[in-house]
Length: 111
Image (cartoon, rainbow, N blue to C red):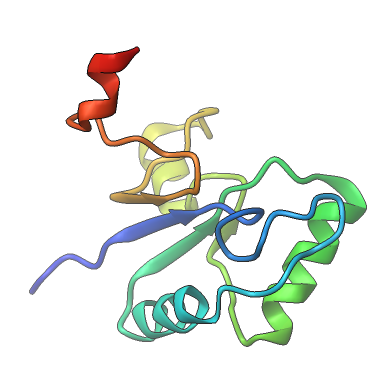
C-alpha cells in the first residue's frame, strides 16, 4: 500500500493573496487540490505565522471553503507520539509556501 503523504501548507501568499492581517482572495486551485489530496488519505498541516485571532480567522476562512487540517502549526499526533515531543520544525513530505526555494534551485548560486 502506498504511503499517504503529509503536506504542510502556508496561509498568507499561498492559500490566499497576502493581505496580512486581512485575508486576501483565495487560491481556489490550491484549495481544491488540497481537499482532493485529503480525500485521498493524505494529511494536511496548516503551517503559518498567524496566531491568536488572526490564526482563528484563517482557520475559519479555510473551513468556509471546506478545507480542513489534521494539525495547525504543530506536528501530526502520530509523529509526536513516535518521537516523544512536538519539535519546532514541522515534519512533512511536501512543503507548500510562497517563499520556498528548492535546494537545487539555481537562484541559490546567486546568493
